[in-house]
Image 1 (tube, rainbow, N blue to C red):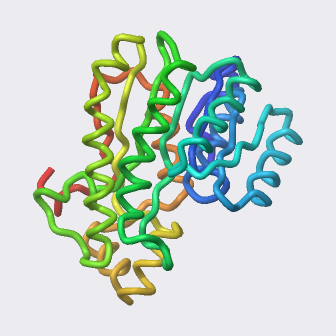
Image 2 (image 1 turned 90 degrees about the vertical axis):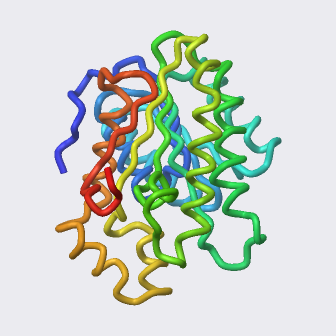
Length: 253
């Protein structure tokens, strides 16, 4: 897919996307790098993929670093942002993309730890690196954003509830962000073809993604949704804006 951003439009900008070694995060990072930004690729345990992506960006003339972190661990989060500070001297765009909760073998409250508590911890750690004109983008799903008014698949409900809790907790920080001149936007999309979440849901509930595709008319793929995330980081928008991507008819929007 052609980049949604103009080459050179982000020259000098510094960007961190959490969970960006693969999927939507990786494509979002590529779009930022193609526009001239210095990018920080965050991973939890997919270091090889992060390094490969960084090498590809550098081969194309871009600037990229890799910064591993477990976002549910405070010390790890501190090291993450210290690494960005040391490499770039600050941060202009933070995309809170990392999420989860459907993985096997995790603690019962892992979804809430990652999708709410870790998001707040990451943003709190990022604020000292950001200044006037910078922006935070929180990536979520319609199934989470509208969970209070539109039920979702039972297999996804714990994740949806935790991501909605994360969105609410982040919105409580908007006055503090505004005092620093930091903008905040939420990007909400329907189920995305080719993501880990869609794959896991299909495995747990065969036919679920096909049914959602039929109801929506079509689902965005990873590159298409990443383009919307990248645009949300740079477009002129109202404060406290939510960018709704894809069909919302079944969610009452």
